[in-house]
Length: 459
Image (tube, rainbow, N blue to C red):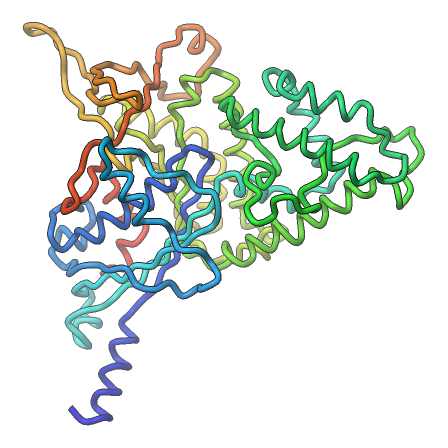
C-alpha cells in the first residue's frame, strides 16, 4: 500500500475508535478496588473465556479481546491491578488493599462493529476505557463546595449525637477550652485539629459513613499540611465579631482554602472529564451494624446524591459539566446473601436513591440500580433434610473457617424500628473464592454492569 493509502487507512481506523471515562465511586468499604480489579480481569479474559454472557458484544461473539495500554494522564498513579491480582491468587486468597489515593487504568477493547456505517469502513473498531478510582471519603467532600464555614459548622453540630457524640468527647473537651476570639495560636489549632481527625477516624472504624472532611482520614500527599488543620466551631451571634487575627478567622480561612484548593481542584480535574459513573453501595454491613450505622450511611448517600443535580443555578454544574449521561447505583456483595434476597436488595437501594432518580430523569441523565458481586466469595445452594430445604451460602470466613449459613432476610423497604429489634440479618465476611492464574474471577452480574456502562459504545 502506498503512503497516501496508508494514511487514509490510519485516519479511518482512528475515526472508528471511541473513548469513555468511567468514574468508580462509593462510600468506604463499598468494594471499589474489587470492582475495578474484576472489571479489568473479566475483559482481559474475554477472548478465551465465555465469562460475560450479559454483555451483548460478547454474547454476539463480536468482542475480539482486550489489553491494557498506557494511560493518557501521566500525572495520576496507575491502578495497582497486578498487586490486587496477586492477593486474589494467594494462598489463601485475600481481598485487595482498599483505595487510598486517586489512580487510573486504561484498556483497549477491540470488537466487530454492529452498526452498518462502521462495518462499511472497517471490520474492527477499538474502544478505549479509562477507569478512575479514588477514596470514597473524598466523595463526601463534594457538598462542601456549596456550604460556608458557618453552615458547615452548624451541620456538624446537628449530627453530633448518639454514637458520634460519645466518640467526640476528647475533641469536644478541647473545643470547649478554645476561645475563638483570641489571637490565632497555630500550635493550639493543630492539636485540636488532630483530635478532630482522630474523632473522624473513630467514626469510620465504628461503621459510621458520614466522615467529613474526607481528607482528614485519608490525607494522601497533604499529610501534615496546614490546609488540613481546622475544625468546626460555632460563634454565637450575641458575641463580638472575631477579629481578622483571631483563631476563628484562621479556621475559616483554612476551610475556604480547603474548599478551593483541595475539593474544587480535585473534582474539576477529574469529574469534569467523566462520561459514565458507577456508585457502589454496601447496604449489608450497615444492616448488621444497626440502625445508627444504616441511617448514617443513608444520610451520607443522600448528601452525595445532591451533587448529581444539574440545575442551572447549581454551583456544582460548573465543576461537573454536563458530560455524565449515565449513572449506575450498584448494591455490592450480593454473594453475601442468598439469591432469593437479591430482589429485595435492589428494591432497598432504589428507595435510597429515588429522589435523585427523579431529578436525573428530568435532566436527561439515565440512571439504573442493580445488585452485583465483583469478586465472588461464596457459593449458593440449599440445606435441609428430606423434602424440607432452605437456601444457604457456603464460604470460608476471613479467619479461615468453612461455614454454611443463611444470613437472614434483607428488607425490601427502608427498615422501621421493629426491624432493628428483631435483628433478622447477620452479615459474615468471607474470603474470595480461590482462582487460578489462567481463569477470570468469579462474579455475579458484573457483565450486566458492563453492558449498562459501555454496551452502547460497543455497537
